[in-house]
Length: 540
Image 1 (cartoon, one colour):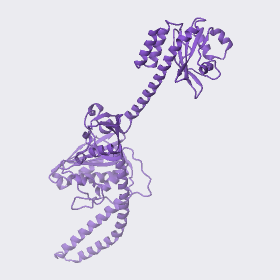
Image 2: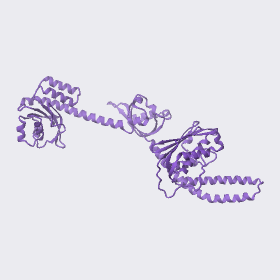
Image 3: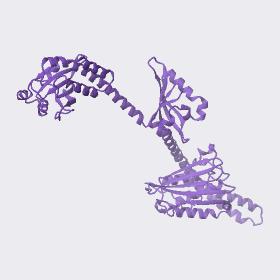
């Protein structure tokens, strides 16, 4: 065997080339040194007792292809694997006559091979495969060929073992990288200076920054100003350095568009071989939606309790209030028109009527709303509401602008939609005592209709925004604070959403999303008012 060939094989191994590259190189070189029309490697799987063709090369068309498997036990190769001794077949055609059950031999005979040399592949003293040489000539191989090719078999064993380990490592690396890269959670790696060194697709989706935009930037970029001032990152670093990790820590981070995201953070130290911390890995799970759902559940439960209480109180008050109103009316009728006491009684009646309105609102709020669905033309509803409101004295300084298609049809309760829209537009007008513009825009989206009511009023103070839909919350001198809570219930009864976004001093935008095809929910009784609603509205 040429020393140059062995040297070249060793160089290929040291260069880290793949097994297939080394195998092809050996095949090309062996054809000039020994009879070699075909060369193949098969690997043994002891768990299933299968010998499977892993790699093969030939100077002609191949019938026995990679992936072919056959049991080792009982075959003529079993002694070779057991003893480690090579096997030479001088005449494959004669061999098949004596061993007609050897399917693999039959297949290479069909390729035109007439003799073969087989050697075991051994790693760490254990055979794990077979190296095959085949020739188109009979009696092509001698014991000298077997002795020489043992060296090749040894190097192929090393190359194959190393290749299999590298392929396993590469596959594991790619598998882990694929998991990390495509995880729905954000996975971020930072160095000791809190510079971002790794940023997966989950982080891109969560925060809105691409890898090219964020890599090398400081993680502070994502931390809200209040947490930055508090030294949160310093506290996290200290905890990780002390314990090695920090799990289940709830915090807030800022997305590219300014949204505050509630996140669950798990972070761990990355250490070098000497045990020194060189960075941190962090897994961030977006809890914003879950927190919103939890808050919505609490709100729903609270509203149910408030509604039950309100209904009980309203029923207890309604009848006595009607009696009081009637009695005062009788007293008023008995007082002469020019008697100053008549003004006092009139004021009492006005306050009784106000109490009656409050009781009616309580009953409306307490009802489980079930819309009476029908084909509804939303633009007609908007026309009707704007026409009524425009007749008010204060609307002389307020302009209502509409940006709507000519027709927008949906399945809804027009009466409830009218009440909601009336409530929202009245709120917008109340927020513009010096005049301004109310814009009503309608956009048709897939499966739903989005209505936006935008005013140029005073806006809502930040401390009030979280309580907008809380029952009995109002910033007005008059009103029960139930208008927005009732409006939201009416929209949600349609399967829609009512959201408010506002900035103090810059105005308010109310977004109402309604499905085109609302499905009427099952309910034992419909929450309907027996007379037209006249809601009192909290300040916006």
